Image 1: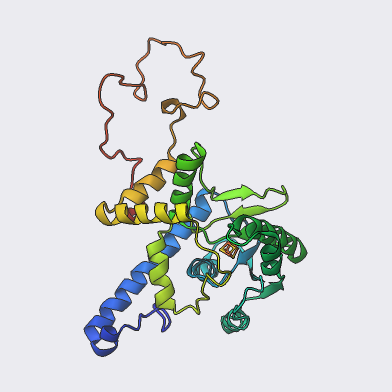
Image 2 (image 1 turned 45 degrees about the vertical axis):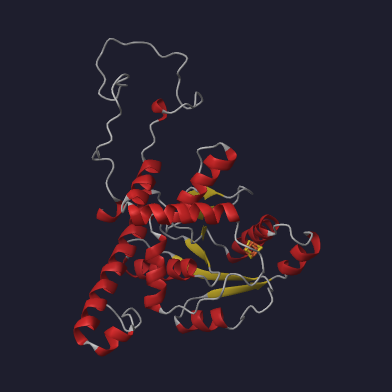
Length: 308
Ligand code: SF4
């Protein structure tokens, strides 16, 4: 059921009952899609198991609020039992409204922990003015969150990265690092001690923007540290958004491509044994058609995520 928070409060919807009903239908559809995609990602990668304690990292942005919100909805009907604890790292950035998250988390009845660590001053002290602060800042943040996960006995650390973050990272790595590599939906942390999960891996950013508006999350601005968003990431984000506008479905297809990798048709000799390749004499439907142009028609494997 769409609740009062989910029903969008647009001026048109407020005045016109038909518009209000339409908006509520749309809101319900969005909620169902988000729950389905998050549930599917959790299942596909065995992200959460019975008895897990999931530490949901909350920054005050739309993505992490949505992550917590959808996980709570899924937990209410999940066949497995798992705990959720929300954790925010208050990095002491100037102007950070320290009361917003505790008030929100209390209002929805979720156990939470606010970790106060002045990484802002450390970063400002160490990084010369004008240089990018993000890599040191995120390294410090990571270390603190791993320690907090240990202290809380969390078995999973859930992050709010979504489909568009995953695709942006893939292009960043292709363009600037010469690697076909993105953000995995589930991984073991670099200290080898924690399992990190990204339950929003299949979710489009634009859906999270709409969801955050519908749920009226008390968003905390993400520019309090004064650092500029990475220019290259921003450019790639713009490129993807433009593609999505001009070619609906393209981003879902790209995400599907990451789920259906064919090493024999790429160039990495460490993934496919090109050296010992021999003609077998037996027809192979997956074999190369060499002289013909590659078939670009959608195959059953290339299903739009949204249609699932
Ligand atoms: S944008 Fe600011 S808070 Fe975020 S990682 Fe960079 S320096 Fe840290």
